[in-house]
Length: 264
Ligand code: Q5B
Image 1 (spheres, rainbow, N blue to C red):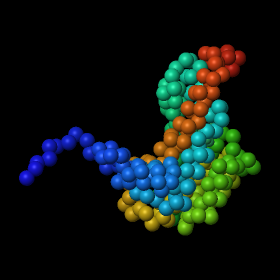
Image 2 (tube, protein in one colour):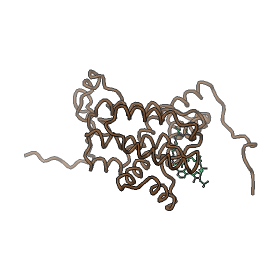
Image 3 (cartoon, rainbow, N blue to C red):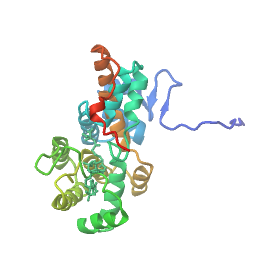
Image 4 (cartoon, rainbow, N blue to C red):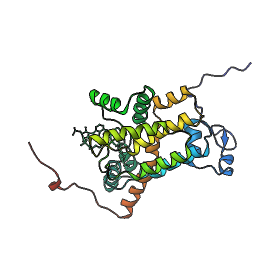
């Protein structure tokens, strides 16, 4: 019989060898004819399955509301400075993307990990937060530079409203809200932020949709798929900031001396 030569690459998500590309076995013509959106494409290429419409709609809402948050956040700032240094689109984009991490936008996976672990172990919000404090770890998904208890993040409210209407269960999100109630009793800036809202709600999507086994959920959380949502979404805004600076023909950025504390 035929002997298959050993391959150097294994790939399971897409195939371009036929007449048209397939994403997780679904032909591009079906994707177009069925009116699929970017949430469906993410479902196929990241999760290797078609998810129910409320799940793909939720993914699309996450992408839309994380696409940009103004010129002052870390990512946009880096992109703007880079574009003004005369660099190309890709350089400007990646310099912004490189700021995404545990403090800025990249706390979604850790929020999901810590909220899941605490909820599944039956910790009260008090036990969870105080345990994190003892370990010297900031609660991922909690805290914001400008949002406050009396100036909540509208994006978080929108996500919560959608999930309460469409998700079969929002137990992880409700847990995150209880954690927020406790952290807000400590300081007014310790709100549930957009990373925490997406992290906890994605746990509800994974657990409540019936589309994932427990083992698959654990693997998704362990590998860390969810920061990918912020990276993908914010790329839209960072590309926009690059074009904006080029269109405005902005000169090289130099930070003003007056805004630096020179000290020994
Ligand atoms: N404290 C976000 O800090 C920030 C605490 C905490 C316990 C916490 C901070 C944090 C976890 C990471 C996270 C996602 C760095 C944020 C995003 C996207 C964005 C961005 C945008 C967009 C803000 C003051 C006191 C200190 C701290 C304590 C703070 N956070 N304690 N758990 N989580 N959060 N990141 O304001 O006693 O005085 O020493 O790391 O979830 O990135 O719009 O800007 O769309 O672009 O700098 O929304 O919360 O506060 O560092 O001065 O702390 O609060 O220990 O206590 P700040 P700090 P003490 S969403």
